[in-house]
Image (cartoon, rainbow, N blue to C red; front, top):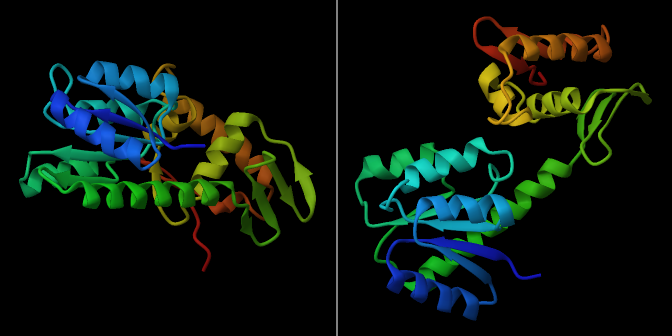
Length: 230
């Protein structure tokens, strides 16, 4: 099936040029002239990639990517900024907001398509990795079957408990804030207090049992960390 690319730019000539060349490469495309329309298409159709200008009417590209990354329906869609903003700080801001690439106009179509293929390839590799089992000693977390086994015996976790455990276990050694966990598991459409995360963590530890409960470390005043293997 052809990959779906959303092109967002307020210049119709640029949209037409990109659309023609990307479709010639076999991609399916959608277009938007402003940030609001881009968000509507992204959440409804979940394109495989978004090519996003920064200087847009209404919501600019920076706000668009913030909104994308806070919505569970669109937070994992790869984004390439294609913009005339050529300062180093603009590029740093774009990448820190979660862009997968930052391209300064003008750029040759051949180079752009090469960058598009590269980001799409990395995205596929990331999806495959997300499906891999997480193994820590005799503890096995399987994202495909939503199951957790210890010493070969399956332990029952609720959906949200499983999502919290998986999110932490995929980031060993990294501190994850409560806010990040809340946004990842519940999204920004549901109001949930920090205490909710703490309760879920306590239940996860209980289910992991004495041998594995200490894998989830509390970082006081910040959040939690899954202990990296030594």
